[in-house]
Image (tube, rainbow, N blue to C red; front, side, top):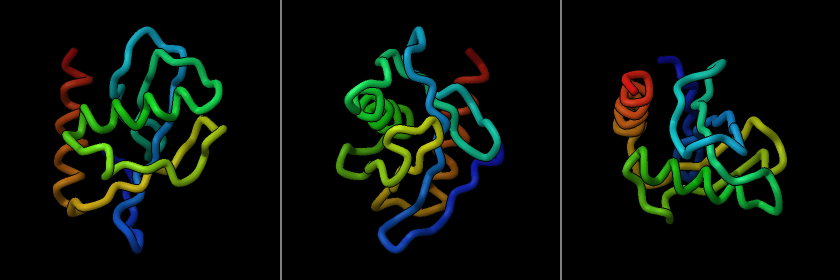
Length: 104
C-alpha cells in the first residue's frame, strides 16, 4: 500500500480518488497514491462528498468531527483533512481497510 499521507498544521492530509454513482459505499484500495473510495451517491450538490466522508468515518473508525474535505469538492481527486490521530495510527487503519477491501 502506498497512500501518500502528508502532515498538515491541523492534522493529516489524506488523498482520495472518488468513485461516485457506484453500487456500494466502500474503500476499494489504492490508486496512484490515493485511497480509492466508492459511494452510491451521484456527484451532485455535495451529496457524494458527504457520502465519502461518512465512508471514511466508518471504514477508518473516525468521528465525523475528525474528517473534513479540504480540496477537490468538484473533482475526482480530493484531499481530506483528518484530525486528532497520529500518522502511524491512520496508516494502520488505512492498511486494515484496504486489506478488507482486497479480501472481499
